[in-house]
Amino acid sequence: MTKKILVTGGAGYIGSHTCIALHEAGYEVVVYDNLSNSSREAINRVFSIIGQPISFIEGDIRDAETLRQVFAAHAFFGVIHFAGLKAVGESVAKPLLYYNNNVSGSITLLEVMAEYDVKNLVFSSSATVYGDPETLPIDETSPRSCTNPYGQSKLTVEHILEDLAVSDASWNLIPLRYFNPVGAHPSGQIGEDPNDIPNNLMPYISQVAVGKLEKLSIFGNDYPTVDGTGVRDFIHVTDLAQGHVAALNYLQQHASSKNGSDTTGSVGFLPINLGTGKGTSVLDLVAAFTKVSKQPIPYQFAARRAGDIASCYASADKAKELLGWEAKLSITEMCQDTWRWQSQNPNGYDSH
Image (cartoon, rainbow, N blue to C red; front, top):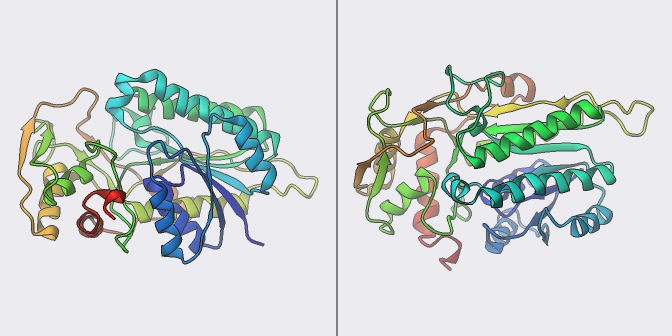
């Protein structure tokens, strides 16, 4: 029997790639997205990649009535919850917006899930919940603290999920803590499409390479790292998408049967890192992208940004052990796929 999955924020960068992976794994997908930070064109292109349409509903996760209509119309096995705002700088400037959307929206979604007895959730969390790590690599037992409202909103939702699992054992909740998603679908048809100046490093590099931006600003060259620039765990978005499929498969195997007398969930709250386990410096990434694109990428050093940390990379052992998942794609492949997407779509989804 095909399992039906609600994907909130499914028109976004990671959501759209995950819809393809879910379809390929035999899941039936319903996308729910308010298109505030994403494009309907992304969904159209997902259709063309998989060769068939998927259900798309324009709606906001804070809108309980629309959510109820969606849950009433579909028998969902579970939810993958991507819907959320994600720009660190914007979160510092507009904290109420972030708490309202990311925290209040998640509460509304969980309340409606409970009403319809859909208690399997994969939550899009973030490595930002670890703050400035005390030790590397970071594993799931590392202390959590946040340096900005965006990270705090993710951590707050994690605390809500933890409390929910304690209060009711029938919930099965897997927050996936992503490190630094980059890359694009190998078709070049979907990728990361910032609405304005990119917040993340890879789209910034690629927009410099394609001539949209004059030069790259590298924030900080005096960190205690291999070359003074920040070190991050970059993970290909298609590897990340497979991590969500693996988490859903795990829930299918371990979530209790609702038909029998056993209504006890056996997963509870289960946080899992998704990363490669390798750190790459900003300058290393620039060098790799220059080699792939054969374009000059002029850069200048700027002062460190508030809230930025020197190094951050994952221990991904738990994902391998429990989910049978590990990242497969290299920095070179991440750069190749990003460059293909950027050069074919210089203005993102508005290119055509």
